[in-house]
Length: 104
Image (tube, rainbow, N blue to C red; front, side, top):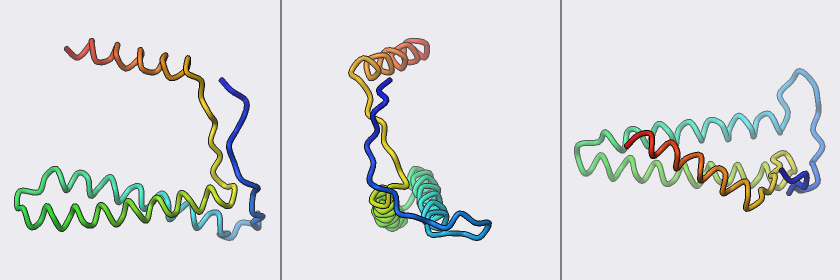
């Protein structure tokens, strides 16, 4: 795996027992991810078109908010990405192809 990371300079934050900006933003990001998951399940279960459209709209808005929290985390250097190689991608593809074969 590549040792290189993609990140921004980290914005300093207070490392105390109290909640700091990073903690609050990470909590908000986790909450939005959870809401997106819940809306997705509700969307699949909606039997009435008007309800489906309402949930879909909420999912779209929540997903946009989740992305903005992610972007803010990344901007402050609190979210680090690790690039992967083509070989690692191919290994993962093969792994899931194997799972797919097992299910057939």
